[in-house]
Image (cartoon, rainbow, N blue to C red):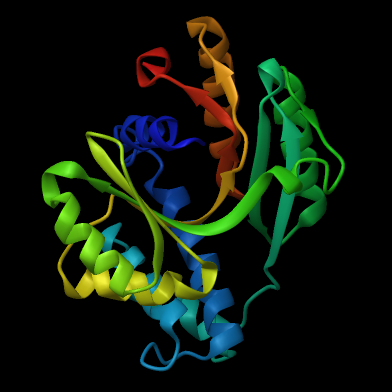
Amino acid sequence: MAGHSKWATTKRHKAAVDAKRGKAFSIISKELTMAARSGGGDPEFNPRLRTLIAKGKAANMPADNIDRAIKKGTGELPGVEILEMLYEGYGPEGVGLMIEVTTDNKNRSAGEVRSTLSKNGGSLASPGALAYNFQRMGQFLIDASKTDEDSLMELAIENGAEEVINNDDHFEVQCAITEFDALSEAFEKAELATESAELAYIPQNTVQITDKAAAQKVMKLIDAMEDLEDVKSVHTNMDADPSLLE
């Protein structure tokens, strides 16, 4: 979602953290397993795994759950094959959606994503139909009350950030995918907490929504999509004033 819309969504969903905690644990567990499978189970030598362990702890994920997920990835415990899928779709008002899924059953996930889009005024797009308009990048959202622009700019740029955007009540830091782990570690060492830290699909062109009812329709679809067990994240090129999302 465009910067301020993404921020509004992040803050809005904080109110539902407890209700969705079980799903959050499930998503993080899958990511931990995949990271351990691809890079090994030692966080000292696997930056991605180290970042995910910190993410799990920040979400109050029990240490046993974290350890079990890692061991599934290293083969110390049995586990199912987990796949990463990306679906592209259109929402109300023609906004584009990039839907990231981690699943052990791609047929189930595809059916749920397609059905949710259809029920909420959207449709599934063919692969590549929207990807050209999104750039895969690291994205961090930081509350403006936690730091000042000059300090953040110095820390971020020194550790691989490409851009620091001042959106008044929050900062958005963008970086290349290859710099994500290093930048995450830099923020952690500086004890600078982020409201959101992820590999996101950043839209190169946005769809401006100025009508509250239209914006609410898009948000209803995003909420429904994020409620699906296998959906990790949803990115869109909608650009709307935060007041329209309340």
